[in-house]
Length: 296
Image: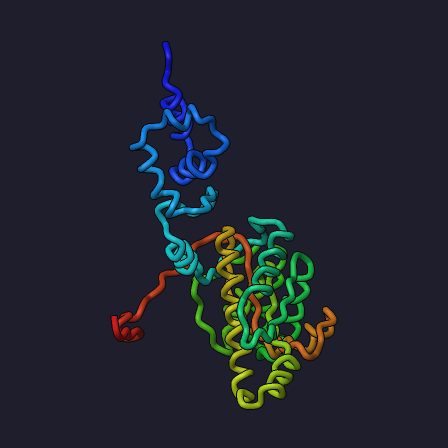
């Protein structure tokens, strides 16, 4: 039984994308025999030509993003899924090297005003993470009322030997006398420390005095974008996180313990680990009260 060459070729090409098919048949046509090219019906060639014009350099995509989700939808899905998670255990879903890769990519590519690159980062893992929270315990002991600290210390001592903590509420509220809140936070897992390099800021203030009063604000905005980018990336890897601000209470001891430059001003601590419970419910204001669109 004789099978027409054009039918055989078309059967093989059906395993490819339309873009690949167009490229192979038309762009790579010189490599095909003139007999096979002549045997391809004109109707098929006419159908393939517009695809090639639309995709002059076709490339197959192996993205993990579902085909039904557009680029912006995939990004916004990560935005939605980034939540504050307090109930974490002392485990990671990814390797330490992957954590470092995420932090490095954020540091390289998150924007800053005039490309000033004022943000600095420190990653604390394992026993280095434990050191930080021991520092926090020591510092807090000096400021928490004596009659309240005994229960706080007892809780912290118990939590330090565990993988994580179970808080009475996934979204606790803070008050200066809340030893429960303090106990919850000091038991959490690895973290990224965020700093702003003040000489970078002052240097740009001198270079561009017309914007001198803006650079501190812009540096803080860039620092916040670093926090958000790393937070969302860690969430995509199956980790939960919450952002803490024990600065300036712990600043000096952090500087002394890890040899951090005194020019680096601590701004936040992103604590992360494997979630053992989901984030709490989130209430939303009416978007109409927060968004105005003109010209649409």
